[in-house]
Image: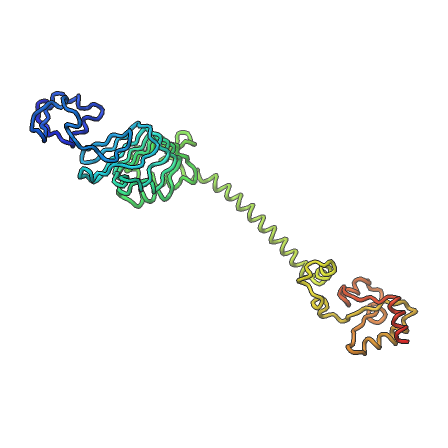
Length: 359
């Protein structure tokens, strides 16, 4: 190319990066400002292009190349970017952001000034552990995430970037810590479906499986262990529920059969007294009182006391063992059947008092 008069303006300013202009020492530069032919090696960058980008981050170099605004922050030991120059400053529409070999653990938020214009993002050799949709420019066509600390990608990221979008043309993902288990099946299926857009797809190795990649991993085998554990878990849950149901059914059956006895016992021990009432316990009972007496008082009870109690106002339904009980039957059982556990037992002292009153 020696001896050719090149048009030297901002579009050629990239040759000053990394001292590339020294390779063109014999190239003549036709400056648009002076119209003089000068060797490129003799020019300074500011002579070739007077434009100084606004908001170019510290430790970054901003210039124009191939109709794009280049923001080169390579190996700048950066961990955050607060603002970026916008390509509209130089009548361009897109930017290329190079943040390789820095200390980023997360990408900039897509609300960062100038970040929305980035079409190509090179973020390899950082410490990124997770990628969110809120950290990606909307018009991204190329994304390089090689050699980071990624273990997986969210379903939302895969759907938005690969499944539902055709803007992203290339995605580099190798040299990360991909963890292959049943939870990674969305990542595995998506990578396989879009392998043409992932140039290094064959190098996506599973960090937990030797000699296995996302292309060769068997989802069935990865999920088999999870299915067995889930099966055992479901058996344990089902057994526990069945035992609880059986116990509840037994309790319900016993209560249904002995509910009167249970209520009497609870009422007698002042338990759940707010839910158990005397009228409920007395319901459907034949007698309201039981008179206990010795055979010496039988004549008085049968001819005097019973007559006054049963024919008075109001009349009382009286139970006596001599008249109402079955001969030889179990006494406590007779009490439950006829009185329901709530009974007024009239003893010898009460008998004497009644005799005195009737006399």
